Image 1 (cartoon, rainbow, N blue to C red):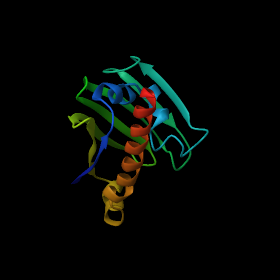
Image 2 (cartoon, one colour):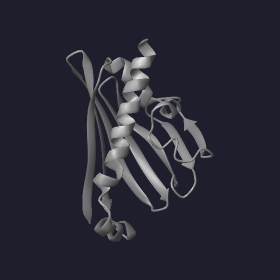
Image 3 (cartoon, rainbow, N blue to C red):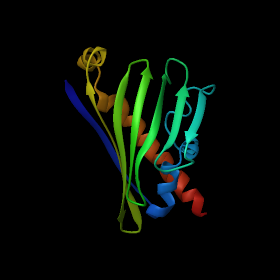
Image 4 (cartoon, one colour):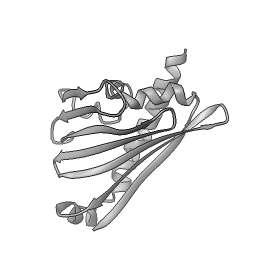
Length: 155
């Protein structure tokens, strides 16, 4: 198995308490997630708790969006959120994902990390595709959008 980690961080000019709720509630992801626009007709469903541990989100979209689900499995306000991310299409995979929010100067250093293992067809895929290159740009886009969403909240 070839484990991989994709991580990106950004300094967002807002307090952790302004950013945390945008990640801790899947309903808020439409404001900033880089994947929300991939399929305008994507089918989304929410279950479990409104936010925090036990909140669940599932999606089913076109070939680009694929399908899968997420569940918040750890929520330590305002410092850390852990998500169990499971892809069911186009490839099955479970990718533990973590967001951390660390005060820095007058803002917050937000770090978004996803880990996983390339196995089965994913292992073959990994020979040709670099997960960091593939997903890293989306993480950067998402952190930019998260910054915009968090700062608009205050204006």
